[in-house]
Length: 282
Image (cartoon, rainbow, N blue to C red):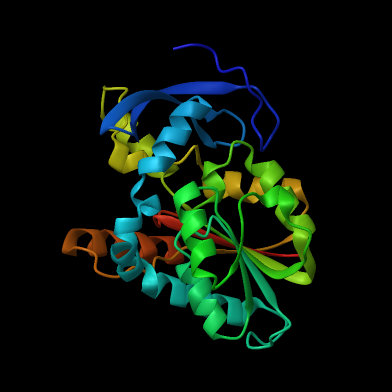
C-alpha cells in the first residue's frame, strides 16, 4: 500500500484513510487486487486502479456484454419504469411533449432510452464501451455519442443510472452535464449506497479484504453525505433524495434485505437502502 496522491474530487482534500483491498474483474477471467481508500472529510470511497485495468474491466463487465442484453433488460425493466414515473413527477413540463430532449449518460443497451422514446421524447445517449456504441449506432433508434465532450445540444432531462461513479473525475463530469441542461431541466442520478455496509463489515471482520459483492465495481462509492456535497459543489441547490429500490426477479433473501433497508431508510435518519436517487433541478 502506498499513500494516495490525489485530491478528493468532492471536497478537494488529500486526506485519505486506507480501508483495505478488493478484487476487480478483468479480461481473460482474471481478478486483480485494488486498494480502497476513504476520504476523511466527505466520506467517499475510492478504488485505486490504473486506466488500463479499468479499460479491461469495462470490456468484460456483465452490463457491457451483448449476449447479456435480454437478461439485463428483464432485471431492470421495472426500475426504468420507476425512473419514468419520477421524471413525470419532477419535470416542469409534460413528459409527452416532443420538444423535450433526454440524454442518458452511460446508456448501456439503451433500454431506458427505449422507454422514454415511446413517450415522445427525443432520445440521446453517451456510451464509451466500443461494442455497445457500435450496436446502438447500428440500431439507429437514438442519437449516440461516444464521449460527453462532443455534445453541443441542450437537454431537459439528463440521467446517470449507475454510471457517475465510474468516471475518473465525477465532479468534472457532473459539471459538464449541468452546462448541458436547459433552463428548468433536471438531472436524475442513481448510485449504489454501500459505504455503510462496507464500514459495518470492516467493524466486525479483522480481514482488510472487502468482498466484491459488498463494494461492487464502482470507482467511487458515495454515501448520502458525499453525494449531496458533490451536487452542491457543482452548483445545484434544489435536491431531492430518494431511498428506494425497484428491481424485479430478485431472490427471497435479497428482496427481504431491500424491503427492510427501505423501511429503515424511510422511517429513520439511517439511510441504508442499497441505492440512492438524487434529482437536481437547474
